[in-house]
View 1 (spheres, protein in one colour):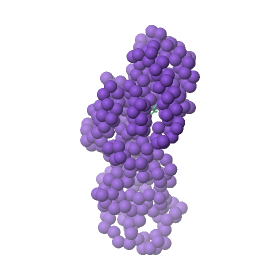
View 2 (cartoon, helix red, strand yellow):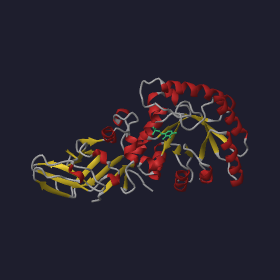
View 3 (tube, rainbow, N blue to C red):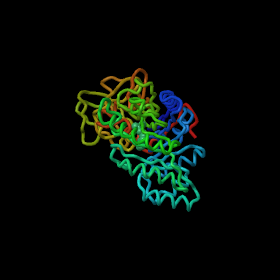
View 4 (cartoon, rainbow, N blue to C red):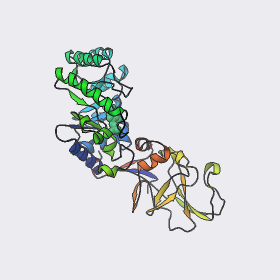
Length: 374
Ligand SMILES: *Cc1c(COP(=O)(O)O)cnc(C)c1O
């Protein structure tokens, strides 16, 4: 019995990618986003499963992620969607990563580095249509940069792209405005550079609006079987890949009034059994969940009672219990008929499912089923 383990079903990742590839249809590439250690699922195993499921490109956020991915997947098409500093540029270029760009000064710099290293990086020019982060929001400057990259013998103009701010807010008016601005400039870019890969959609946009698919979609959250709208992944046929499990380290009888944990935030309302589970905020099971969430044991829900500490939490098992030391505890996932999803946990914390799986710390070993992990 391991104290805490994240069990990753690679078959689920493969299934989700196949579903997304089917949804966007032939002629639209699926780029699986595996940044931040594959949203906590393990970057390399997730990437390999995504490729088996039909992803033809992989996206990361940082140069070191690109290098690590390249070492494991020598032939993959890797795209770095995050900011690239001058100090990190060589790492990305030597990894053979495609890179994002939105400033003429950086074009000149990257061109010089490419010449020195003897490589010809594929560049994706980013148009900021309203996310208000990376990218240039001036369409004429963006078009001029596309022309400059295309004319640069040390660079290849590979992509033209943007990112949506509100794709997950169904019915909002901002997403259609971003899409319209992007579509208009994409037509002008394509007129002079017909070979570029035009891409915009994240997972939410893929489900929400086929007109956002263009030549490629960049899916992260849906690849892992999590719902981009924070509701129920099953509504879109997605299968959650990650389960978080621990076990009952001890069971003991508390007299009424006895407390469990730091600060005595919970006291036994009656004589009751308390189970101790050796997982805590040091594993990413956040302290803010104290007294506010359940765990599953023996196919039943039990409340986390008392303050979650770094390495342990306590559960009120009731005045009579069949729970025994060594029993499996499911914190995220299914047990018998009961399910607790990453979306459920996110709702309690007032955050999004992304942050829940990304937050499972490196201390928690990842165990792989349903495919080769290496
Ligand atoms: C992380 C990221 C994505 C993936 O978004 P999901 O909502 O997880 O599908 C797509 N594009 C960019 C630029 C990103 O940074």
